[in-house]
Image (cartoon, rainbow, N blue to C red; front, top):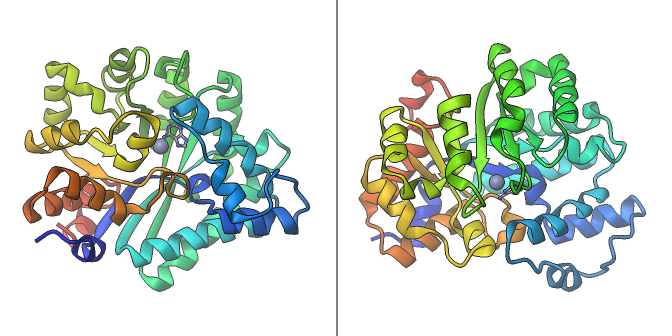
Length: 325
Ligand code: ADE
Ligand code: ZN
């Protein structure tokens, strides 16, 4: 039977998690105190009470201001290291971590401070068996020029970054706004993926832009493709991985999109289950597997297939994949 314990012990890859979304209330308060930043809350209960959101925009309005507590390279290290220990507990063998440099450079923190702290934590995680890589995201509500500069700054750190992604507020910020930067990223050898958040205005158009024009290798969320059978066929034929996030979905919409996820799984699409912003959405990766498995009565075969999909749609080498699937 599929139990919480079984799901925790199942070896998996995590492909959709924002390092900034792993900032737990206790670390947030600790860093606020150390760095003398007033975040408006003084206890864990007060921080948790401030987590009131019911859509993407109201979530992001809570999420970004709190990042002010991150100041030094060590702060970024500590944030990533705390997550990587949780990854180990959840039997995550490989993780591709999103980070948002512009959320920090825009408030005066250097790109180096961010990348060096995060990267050093990924290197230290090797000692406890977690293979971690970084995916740098552009903030889609920032300008094209800001994205261009960010890609340029990343050049000196090319060896520390596996791929480029796109996140933040999708409303009025279509994928095509950044098409030239993604083309440039591909020419520099980065892998590419993009958020196509659930139930957005123009979801299907955005998904088409990502798949048919820009040529992403994965879709982050993207479950609205079920509305368009041609896109479902496209994703199936091209083996585009889809990184779904059940608990996140429950927060930013009315449900976890379990019907969409299980339908896509049944069609043979490489859907994975991930935690997105676990410090805000109430659980790490195993809890996301459990939420879906419990609500949709998943079989052992189904959850094992999801875990296999997570490795197959990851950006590890085919040789490494053979260790897991
Ligand atoms: N940044 C952090 N989590 C996000 C999400 N679910 N969608 C868009 N941007 C994000
Ligand atoms: Zn996300």
